[in-house]
Image (tube, rainbow, N blue to C red; front, side, top):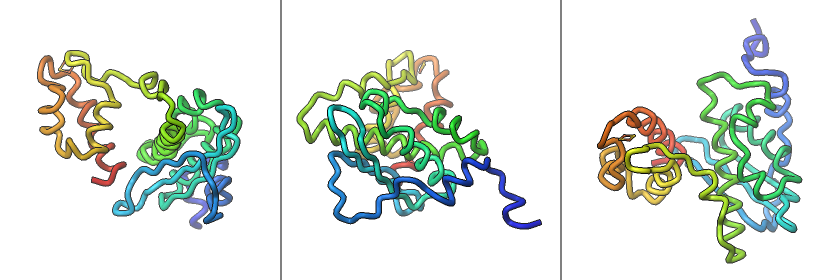
Length: 200
Ligand code: FES
């Protein structure tokens, strides 16, 4: 059996992996906002650079050291995001990208979150450079711990800033999981994924 016979991805994934679209190759690319997530240490760093006019993404370039799934999903994400308003682009989810790819193997799903996280980071950077309030951030926050009202974005901010590098530190800072405890498994999964993404 040849390598390609064993390929478990859809033809669309294969196409985007073999011929990725909108790769950042110009070292002098002048972006209006850029976002970087992941780390070289675990081999899946992702950079997204945007040009924005009238709150529309008019160009998006990216580069990654990630795996086939990260490359294909970011290539697809780049095609989807160009032409979107900032609001639409901010709400692009890994599920929407994966659907357009015709699916990814389950264990590869986490690789596809890097692209949309870097896209949101690039929009955050753009708004910051413009001195504008970021109203999108709150709109995508999801409550993880209902008892303590802790959102995924609070958890992400604590991991990103290295204020919570263990689950115990996260609990100390937020009180998450200390009342009924039913959020613990979901919170732990999210926390581990974020540690990986931010390379801690
Ligand atoms: S939902 Fe988090 S402790 Fe109850």
